[in-house]
Image: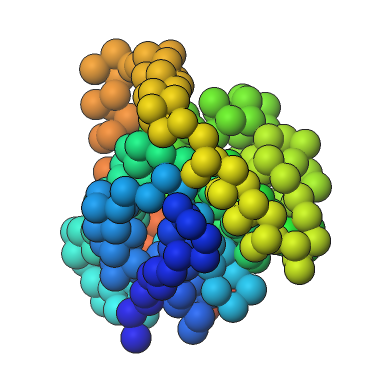
Length: 268
């Protein structure tokens, strides 16, 4: 069964989008990502809260189906196409729609927030976590070269040393560490999470919309200008990521994930 995005209006001026894919720990599949992009392009609420169901925010890309359906006897080209379809295009569209949303967005991290789920949360204006969750980036455990646009977001938020630690070690960090690093803005008890997120959203919704949208645009453009790459370098980085989709190590990383065992890397 595909996942879904539940929509409700818990307060005046606030729309809540809830990721629901409980059988896969709220993994981000095509249905969820497409729906998020669609909703964020059409909503006009002064504040949006993004959260998850069943004690989880999101476990990241839905690579479970990929490991079952595509790795086995698939050729490298077939696997590469399927992998890129999953972790690139629909995810990029959802992220772009979230970043372009003109008004305030708050991520209420209702449980563990991993991989693409963490980038989704980092794309919101504010993040509130409860004190029992873990946050992490596992590309190094999967053999995945992450997008340069995604990595830039982490460099802007938490700096170079912590981005290296997060991506190169591939370990999870607890909520208190995430607060110190700047990955989240607030940490509260689990029972307080939704109320705190809604309080922030209501306050944001009550502020001047021209100010919110204008200041978001200024921040976005300043960050974009600071992170601008030479076009030739950007093409090289895109080629590096595309080559990763065709690598034996990514196939092995996904297979090992599905089989719940350590990967046997071949560096090719």
